[in-house]
Image 1 (tube, helix red, strand yellow):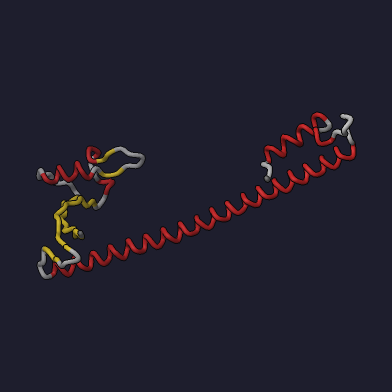
Image 2 (cartoon, rainbow, N blue to C red; image 1 turned 45 degrees about the horizontal axis):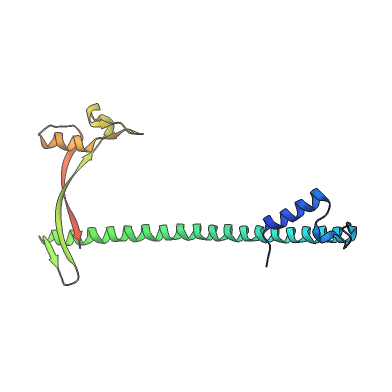
Length: 170
């Protein structure tokens, strides 16, 4: 059975501390210097082999991790491309349906419908009154507060409420 680096190190430490181990003793209990030197050389060779093996395994793991990282980047790029294409196609269908006044489209395999939503468009964030700016790590318009103010009839320069049609795919 292969020994672990810990076991090899333990044997080597014992040998270095005591100058011998049980395998280096003669039948009379004396240290056989030739056996001790041979054992020390053997255990150091095993240790070197074990360290080299572990180091090579580490290199393999790091190489695999690098390959995975490259694949992650490729997969992310593919995902983002597919998301962009889906968005473009969704806009394409939306334009077609709205051009003909279709509110719904349904087949056995897909159902399309529209849901109204409102978003706040801001022409110039720096021109907004401070009460409509919420503090974050960076300054950003508080679109929720702006939306509420616009719905209550308040006029704010550079801001308007836009009604959109969002396509639902189920």
